Length: 238
Image (cartoon, rainbow, N blue to C red; front, side, top):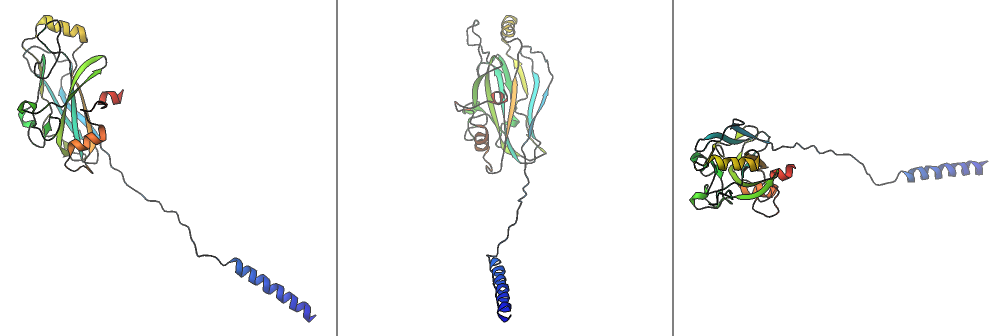
């Protein structure tokens, strides 16, 4: 009887050791962690003053003001693309074309817009604001909707505040036909184009990470308009 009790006690003792041994382990624990971030956004809109269907009469100004507003939450740099139909008088009435300095269709910016920190029409911030002062136009050529355009690019060199920022001066403020445009030439132009359109597009890029560097910010985020592989806003939207 005593041996039996001893055996039972031994079994119980072994069982206790087994249970204790099974609980021996590294102290571990697992937790799930969720990191919550807030996000900002860049949203822009073109603010234009223009009466749709305005008549183009040689030598008569047509008001066309183009500003850009930043409606997103983050500070942003902006630039505009002004696409002018490629209709320029090259000296041959049978071959009308377009170039910046020999316009049939003129467009103007105000002097107030051509100061440091506002609109710059040159290829880089190193040049003067207005190419006529010795700089080089920032432009490229594209066929948009079956029509050839020369597209001029103006960069606004100061970042716009989020939600309330608006360019202080308009990029352009008027368009008009050259006084030398004849009825016959105008009829030829309309016959070729169907209608005369000036196209405007804008791009906005975050300032964060590019403080004070409008060209770098816009070229990094959208591409350099002067590069061969640049995709214009109209091509991106197509």
